[in-house]
Image (cartoon, rainbow, N blue to C red):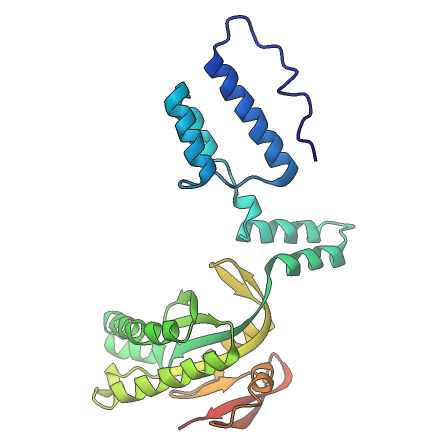
Length: 277
């Protein structure tokens, strides 16, 4: 595919225009054409092209402002960002939009299969009222210090923190369950030597399936909702709950048992409590 559209090669340069200015304009035109043709996001510091341009600047006195503009060329439109998602959602909301095609594009861009772990601390509001927010912030800090290394060892990715809750993603649902069991065991061990108000009373739930993952910023989808609902509203301290989809994916596990807890307001599917040792 040719990038040429006549804008650079056929240009009449003004009389007396310096070679440096001609080079700057030619590079700018080339990069504009490349961006238009195929997208352009290769100018990050450390990249081969960045180093080349820096060498050109040193040898031919390209202005620092010009090089800075190249380095700062916007590439966010090519990333799986919130902006890109909401731009597509905006298009979807327009009259006459091809909803099916836009949905396909959104799932193609953001759709991924993950195990979704949602954790929550039992009795947050009650204990804040009783002991004050600073005391509970310490409990949140100690929860992070204890649980995040466990998630890391099981290849979990911390996607989001909100108050006393964590949203962690795992590629394999088996690893998510292993991490959840390790977290509950760690909490139980620590709580044995703590006063009741200092205990980490962990509620935990796991969903599994295709979700919309928006980079490292957020996630949306049925299984995100299921894990959040089960972890925040249904699970009690020391419990691990799993959605119907996660339970199905864990059917081969022989080291734990599953006990039905029925459905939630999200749908008729049966959810389960994990009975672990």
